[in-house]
Length: 453
Image (cartoon, rainbow, N blue to C red):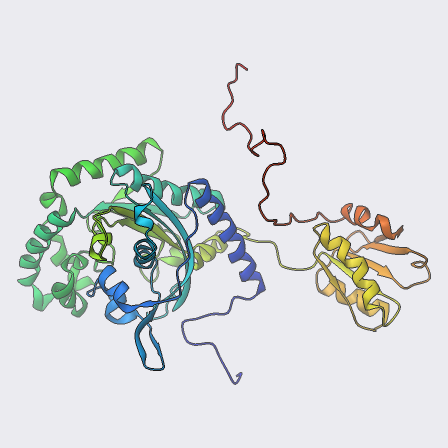
């Protein structure tokens, strides 16, 4: 056993998984930008009160899952356990709540929770998320659900189902909590220990209990639909109508409440359906809802909000379970080798033009025999080797050998890039944004065209 090991509940992202995470981030972030959600990034550490006030002191996160941190006597800090409260703090602190509404943000961040490690649940994990402020309309709830549903279609995830519910606005929730508190209080001694705690913190959470001893009691509890205000019912009906019109399949789950105290009205979960991921209870690949009172509770104006967040690791492993290849294996397609020792600069002069052309190129900079270098290139998964420093490859010539087809040609240095393109496709290179060179060209093609034109 190695002398040092990673902390329990964490994991190393080895190159293959790191490449997959990078690919997923590119796909999700590009989709967010297409929906009008620019990226906002918050610090990994936050003041503890951000989550006490935002998420709620009775939530599992604040109750026992947060990692407290401090330095030189400075306390009251915690590693960020979720995104919405942190983004809301940034919204208010930076005056972004004064921006034209609705105000939209996307994030892609590591999160930290001291939860019990289990299937697809880690103590350090990555989340993507959308937050939309200043849009009280049901259409905003539909938009974030549509985003997630379309994202999963885009990456090829099919083994999931969408569950939705409404838990009412704040005044309606107050009445509901009173009714539930009276009902569950009569059954306190028969409830599970966790539900007994929730009876004193957030009684709504009891409805979400999976404990067998709670299920029969929950079945007789007051129904959310019986307590909902007229406006809440109309809002939820608009959400359902919007999803139906967009062709998004869903199930209404009357006991779905979510685990954070700031939720109001619409709540949603995209739950994995593969039997492999049903062993430890339901696992959501994305979940969210409306939080209309959160900005006000954190010291801002009475600004509505709605959002959704997805677990990156959950998405990655669910795709793998379906046999979806997320990213190309991170290896060099081209290797540069030489039969002449001590000519590293010459090998680099061959490799760099290929790199500039978009190829992934590694250099064998050893003085080993040429055949050993080529063997190493094969072991590293290269498809092409470029050979210099031999009888054939001299006087400005090199050998380009296709390791798959087992054929080679001698080429002038100036023709190496063109020859390698015959065997390997270059990769697109990311670049900084540049304005259009033509003042009338905005870099856009027509979005819709009239077939009569």
